[in-house]
Image: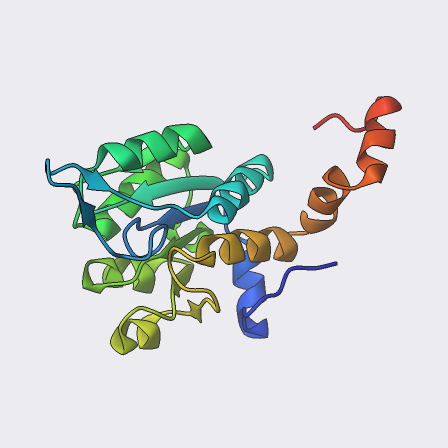
Length: 194
């Protein structure tokens, strides 16, 4: 069992080098719609499969960051729930934030994947080792990305990215093993510690 991947074969080697996945929030982790209650409170909907994919990716040793132009308590809460330590809010200068983070982590831009869906994401998509967008992004954004996911933003696109990165880097068999009956046998034998 392997993940469905829409990654072009020529990008697989680049995907193997990725050590950081940086994500825009609105339009990537959400469907891009903003919901406001009568009291002005903003509400966001996140996909649980994306969240689980992020947790698995982090367990595989790949850092995850959020870089968003908006400021939202929901983003802070979601990042905390997923264990994401690197959160940049109210940042329209996505490439500057990505460069700051790669320097901080001792990585190059070639080791970073960036997924965004609108113009403020363009420079980061172009500069990253793997520039990603979603099918619901404008056509001019899809034309600039290395990879356009099959799933839309807010509907499992991030999970698709996470699964594909884990698969290309050889982590997928261990993920599956963790969720099969064989994993409990390994744990009982003391060999399944992760």
